Length: 199
Image (tube, rainbow, N blue to C red; front, side):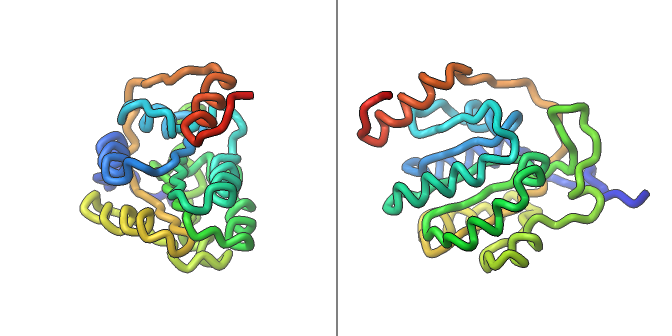
């Protein structure tokens, strides 16, 4: 069985996410299940973070809905390779809708981190950036070095189409940083940050 050498990855997921969010302080952020949620929370809790605790495979599509509803704001989805693989069909839907303000950041360690670090499909040759391009997303690319973060940030700020970045991160088992698991609280806080009344 041929698998990608995930040990060759050099990007520290927590450092990358913290740097990205610091450079995009006004972005609305949706997090994928598991480690991406921990990474975003570890970078600093904010009322414009929408943490998903379930709905595996749904982060990018939640981001799509938010981008369409808030076209004047940048929306950043931070998710993982396993979560995005679960929702792979959503990439085609995102391209069909063509929001100008959506950036999808896939933190790819080549493993299913939440279920025991089994190799994910990206370790077996699936390129999520290539899938995104095949679905019609022109600005889909891989990031192998932390210095390339400027390309991701540029896409967030320009808001000139869907920006899909597959970030090759180290397969580290980091301590969990847990935001509130109260979904109603997270939803209402996010709504209030956008100027809407809580439900």
